[in-house]
View 1 (tube, rainbow, N blue to C red):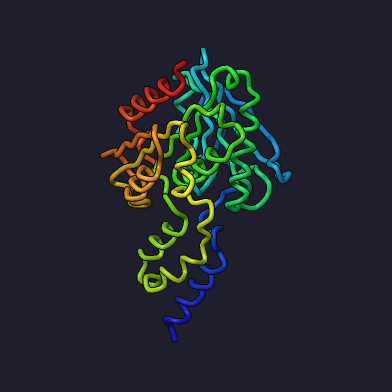
View 2: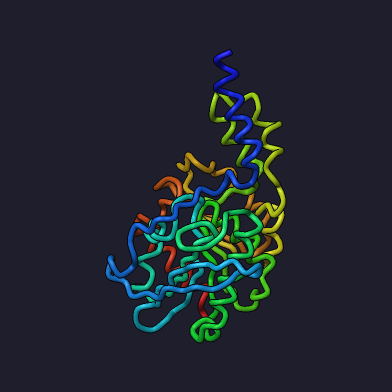
Length: 277
């Protein structure tokens, strides 16, 4: 039957993909920071399991007000996601942009457990920097990176140096997100509940965000987000412990809030408070 030929391969693919369905890596690098006029360091370090990782470090222009670890979304690599943070060095903030295993020039293949190791390895590298030892650091994640960031910060050995966690357009649960995505297509709508159980719900942000406290948490989300519904932000905020802040933004879509200058001003003001002595 025609419908079976169309549906069954999709179902098998979803069952096989499991957690890996959240990772859509791209190997080719579109550009370098130098091409957009930014100073940077090519950085390589190893995760705990020995996987070789690649990152870019953008030093702050002038006096360093603070340093961020940036964890990007599920697709492409740091050469495209730099669009979210390229403007921060000019405002006094250094940024380490990490490519998870399997992305860009990082070795290995993507996985949830691997990406969590990669985030901690990036914190290891930053923790040794003199500017981080002096002022600490903030972890900033978008979409998938925001969801990963919750677990990374909650369990990091560097919590004493982390001044804050900022998550933008993050989802609260891997399984819930899979169920919502499956429910958007008529082909998979009827299978959204059984198939979603093929996705691991271990390391869910909603189960870990309370453990981030007393590190301050800022949750950003556009109420126009058509990729990750704003209900995820509300759920994460409800599960978090103080100090916590929720920004429901009227402009922009998925991970687009920082394309708006007013939001950039508000974001840097929040960073100034987090890095205040």
